Image 1: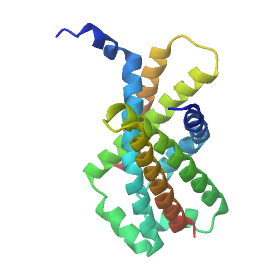
Image 2: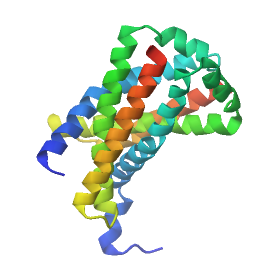
Image 3: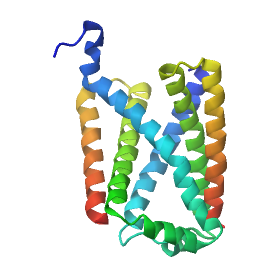
Length: 108
Length: 117
């Protein structure tokens, strides 16, 4: 892992510490009486705060997970580092696209 | 069972902590696209998301959810330990901190499981 990727990995990790802690609290709150679409959407639809929170979360996790997957592929698979990087980039872009779609689905 | 000398480090608590951090991250990375796809069901009709939530309201799924809560918490706390090591003065007791992170994660997952059943 080069320095640039290391810094992105650690910066997104630091950014996600409060985001994940809030997410775990929301998981506990949301499952207190079983999950329902109405419950989830009543909380998130039209909320700028939740849109910003989940939007930031998706961006950070896409970068963080892609770099992590790149490291695992480079160290644990026979793939050359260049291909590991390309696969990880594809994974990161896929996560960002699916995540953005999920955020749009619950906040718009 | 005897362990080859060059593999001896693999019995250490902190080596295990690093392995758990990596495997939990990998598992979460595999889960995330599925999580996003399920949430996107609400894009077309909330009823579709509701139908999925009802279908997955089963003991085995709840166990899997508790495992995910464990993985997320242990990855958070393990990552926090790494960030603190890298950015602040060294503190002794890293093995105990790693064990504490795993214990807290197991408790959080267990409490989740009790609440959803």
